[in-house]
Length: 73
Image 1 (cartoon, rainbow, N blue to C red):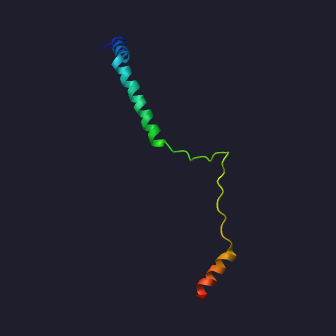
Image 2 (cartoon, one colour):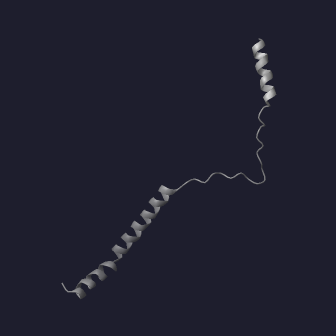
Image 3 (cartoon, rainbow, N blue to C red):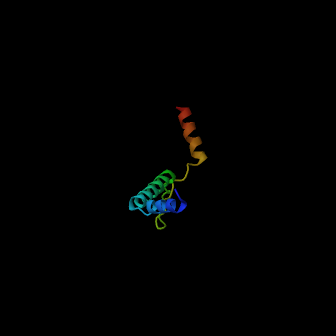
């Protein structure tokens, strides 16, 4: 087979609509698979207008008082 005939065959194969559709479909599937594998859920951000106040930790003195009351019973 001559080079010119070979290039004509390759050109006609690459220009075929079935080859182009298959290529686009495969690229889309590879992109989707890559996206799914690397997807990480973003942490929820607190709204600027509403701040959630956390309950303050109990003071150490209160804990000591509770423990002494339980020990005396």
